[in-house]
Image (cartoon, rainbow, N blue to C red; front, side, top):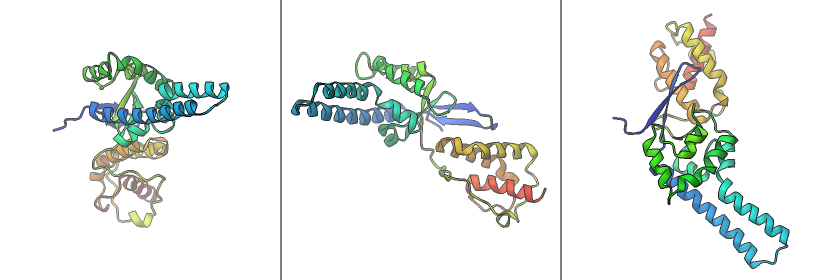
Length: 242
């Protein structure tokens, strides 16, 4: 029985991508850790101003930095670190767009500016109420930005390799791929062509879904073959027999 909230997204590969939404607990842990980091930075900057005789322009720059730490801390992490702040990385969650795509600067800025509203009336009560009440567990900032927060770790699914593997024909010479039809082959090619541009969790999920779909049509492949190796092996075996 699945107790996690999930969202299903149709993809160009013909695969229905099922993302596991992050719950209130994991998001609270992530926010708590990020807040502690923000507080530590702010205290360090404030103490630096208090105990040193810095020029006025330096003090002005520090005040700007304080503002950015307070209101812009999340944005660079979410945009340049795959939707993950330090807290989200520790909690195993990430922010993505409504279709599972990487989050952009504008969306990240919107969701984090509206964090002030989510905080009201106190301690993110507004955000928690919104997450409980919405189908995709979105706080008000997520609703405005069109983003969702999902789990970054998928139980039971191995991470995909960071670069394409080269499958020699000798390794798949005994595979019988005659049952794999042209539609399956086109779908596999589409995934293999686009996989390096996908975030690792989404790439791993796609590979697992496609492999589980075509695996019953392949005879002779080793048991528990890595999904991407299986997909590449099918392509190599098909090309060799063409």
